[in-house]
Length: 149
Image (cartoon, rainbow, N blue to C red; front, side):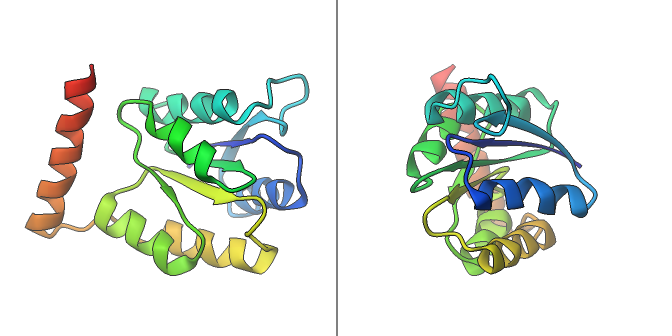
């Protein structure tokens, strides 16, 4: 899977994220502070990573900033992106399962290395629900994107 990753700071958890994704066999494209010479502002690098998902050049993205909030807000402004700020594995599972999230947002401050691995395990194990109510909610979210265009 091709995954775009962004971080506004070159923090140990961000480096561990990239290493962990590569160890899991993913092709990683880095943005922001993880890419020498790139603009590290959270709005800029989160948008860049999210645009890859929207364009179909990345399967998913992981966007990071100190709290994860700014990164998730910026990513969610890109039509077609469903970014979820996840601080635990249960939330990551639900975001993929019930919301068909395609961008994971993480807090550089709150995410430890063991927690990161738990979140990634849940994120990559869960699949979008086939439940009719869940699918209708996702269709509604898709129509909100269409309304913005």
